[in-house]
Length: 167
Image (cartoon, rainbow, N blue to C red):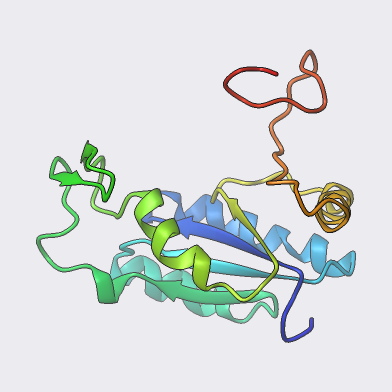
């Protein structure tokens, strides 16, 4: 793996999804075997010490994993389930759990990643096809105006469409 890989996969992990994330994180070895130049940034989102101490040492041993978390941004009174917060755009949200909302973390962290491409992936991202990742990187490199590639599967949908308008 080079010092500046082609892509960073950014995975938020909370306590409830740590077990399934453990399987997903280890599945990224398929990309390493396929010689995809990547890193997986595993970001602990308000992990309890018990969960962090159980999984971070295991994940940190994998050569493609970088570990990070939001301990420096949280405090005992934030975030709390049911708490109201207002986004920079002025939209009020109710906290669904004792963890930061994904857009809050993404806004703060994704722009700091040094790779040309970033992919946000779910902790339950259990189906990982190296051929799809290679195809996606080829398309992104060949088309500078291409905003992204999605992995949602729907057999009756055209290959290329915008999610909401279906065009």
